Image (cartoon, rainbow, N blue to C red; front, side, top):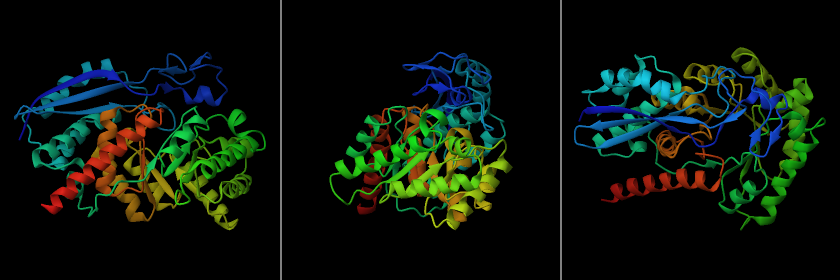
Length: 409
């Protein structure tokens, strides 16, 4: 089976793109808006609508497969690609993709990925095109996306649904209730992106929120068997608040006690200026936590953008879990390799992404996560909680049902 035609369509992402540097420096909010000027190049305003590129491959049997590429919510910082200008990229790269892909066979995703790698595409565009070529390979082989990944990379997975991590965005209380009701495995993300407003001078604001989430679960869970992991993304605000890594470790150890009886993961507690400094800071903080006898786990995100980055973080034992943020990695071939590199290194593999993603990229990500047996899958698109959980959970349930029915036939 071959590609007959290639179309690129500019469209929408889900949650807006935000200028993280402006928010971190106290951008003034007004409802859903920010009224302060942006700080990061490429932003017209601190919060603006996110964009996407849909790549449509028409196959020679008439089937059309789709992938969508986006930049992440906080584009343009920590080594990440700048904001996506979807219309400009469609006009610039549409003819390039048509010339490179029209007439090519789609039966092998890895062969298609090798062709894409030679084009030097921007990461968000590469992400979208690779979703389409993965979907095309699955269609050609009459397999699900998860089965295609497992077959081409020899993962040996049992095709079980992956634990879901939901994110509440700025809706930090009602969102938690929605997650508890749906028995999400990991919650709530929290979007702890401003030290003064969300951590507090002595950390009391964050400590109080962790206790609230813990108590809310204990009060409203439907049975004692529901024991989710608490996971807060802190965007470097712990380091901003406490300064030294030793002080950060003491605070985080206490935060782990506040979260009990639930386990606690802290994503990006400190923010460094380069990959090397980020690895060193996280590795040191992790050692200090163990010295304090704390079981709090650290999750790497910033500066852990590419396959090479993931390998470097894993080799340095810089974190207990690495987020492989699919839009930042780019092509899904690279993302699969990164997730498998985590597994090989004994580090928990988090199939991450962004609230800016679309329903299509969320479905493909769910298949990738199942295909490599990732340890965690971010619910997306958007920050609405219910919708994102529904999209990825249903996709994994359908995949498991299809594979199960095949095994019985």
